[in-house]
Image (cartoon, rainbow, N blue to C red; front, side, top):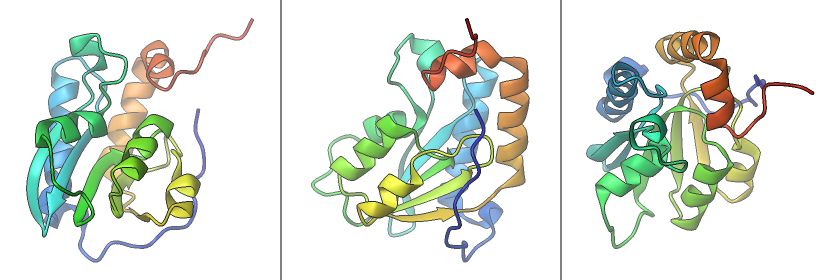
Length: 164
């Protein structure tokens, strides 16, 4: 399913110059190299990467191991997330959006939202700043994955791609 992204803030740095976004992108590539879903995420505080992770649903057989969840799990317990930014290569789904809201992560930087629109309206309604980079590398990576793995993609976003 493809949704049009809503207007968003523009990034102050090109994504290739942001080390936290690059950590998320590298994590997505790692997942792709492992035969998984190419979505990566990184959690940063003050511009320093705390942890990165990637979608591990295929690799671990874990239905909730999305990239954002993996990055947060890798970061371990934090006293507070209110001074962090979550970077992700793809717009967050409803589950990951709920986690962002739960831990009061104030800012999410998204690689792209052309191939999946995510839950921007919900994030913004809860005061989360959403920045969409529209990174062409992320768009290309997801378009290729979705074209080559439609059943796996439908499973990842809990949509039945087969109509009865």
